[in-house]
Length: 135
Image (cartoon, rainbow, N blue to C red; front, side, top):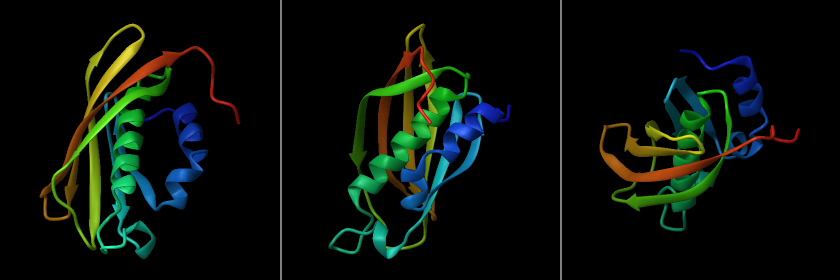
């Protein structure tokens, strides 16, 4: 299932992602992948990808997977376990919906390096809202 035009418009308004070089790579029902080509601006003072960039990628991927049912959600909770890191290359955050309830969605996320190595794993809970996001 491809993302709807409504979802594409919502994603286009996520200027934070584009400003931080995060790009939606794949989206279907209950699943999404974001990628990040590591730039100098993506790195912390040690030269590795900043933890905030990893967390943001995970939140974006999880949110896109949650929104794939066409409803509107906001992040309620998020947790990420940092396991490894990279200095360069491409990293990906893949998110899969584990459970959909009436008002919440629970999503699992894994971030991997270009070599397939696991960099982080986590989970997010999203709360359904009735209103559309403001333009």
